[in-house]
Image (cartoon, rainbow, N blue to C red; front, side, top):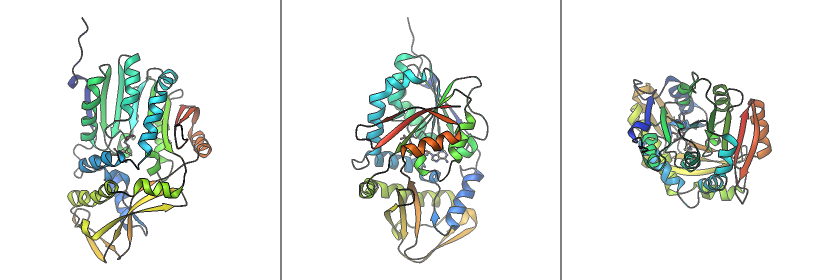
Length: 329
Ligand SMILES: C[S@@+](CC[C@H](N)C(=O)[O-])C[C@H]1O[C@@H](n2cnc3c(N)ncnc32)[C@H](O)[C@@H]1O
């Protein structure tokens, strides 16, 4: 008789943030200080996803105007069997996994065909990965989840994939939209051996008004305002949510949207934990998120320059969103 292995025996957690006083490595804190002292202020993306922020983000992605997850889910549901066929069974690493709700659609297809299926979600937030695993594992008895919690700078400091194991790295959920350069893509490529695979999902360029309406809503404002509370809790700052206003801006340079908080008054914010005071002029904004939009051909040549060769690109029926499978060469 086949006995099922319990969920607890199919989850592990390696937490690289254990022992770090703020939960963030030096590199993230440096990025934060750069962002706070820049001429155009910004918060690095990893500060948006504390426990509350991750819950707000999951609520935001379910809003009807935010079409991206619907398009990505359509692609995964339509092409999951083709993807499994093209990749075969590999160790699957999801970079910036969050609750892994969407990747669970693909895991279901791997689970049907293979046993064991080894899944490694990577995220700065351990709790959201663990809670996600408890949601999808009961339906996926062949899947083994090994969570890796930490900032990318720490996680990718050494090779994480088991030597000699064919691997598939995923960067989905349009996570690439937040990266200002190729550092993350290059770090992912360094993790891979020739013949390993990489799958990336990204939103395609479209009408600015349509984009703005996808990001301008109450749930998105909660995600942005929550960063202020999270920084207060983590670095002893004195932000007051009431003195900032949420707004969405279209940026013609990257043809995407940016979320900002606009300071309603002239104010000084003291970060006791960082021994830093940051001045905000009235009307000055701090960027809380960047959602770049891409062109398929440009994305292909960008990835080729980093050492990937396209295997196949899938799009939704409207051609709004794309998922590209590649091989490391
Ligand atoms: C846009 S969400 C994507 C979630 C999921 N992949 C999906 O498709 O819905 C990005 C995730 O990446 C994580 N993240 C962002 N920057 C990070 C960093 N520098 N290090 C580790 N995790 C990071 C966040 O915590 C968040 O859960």
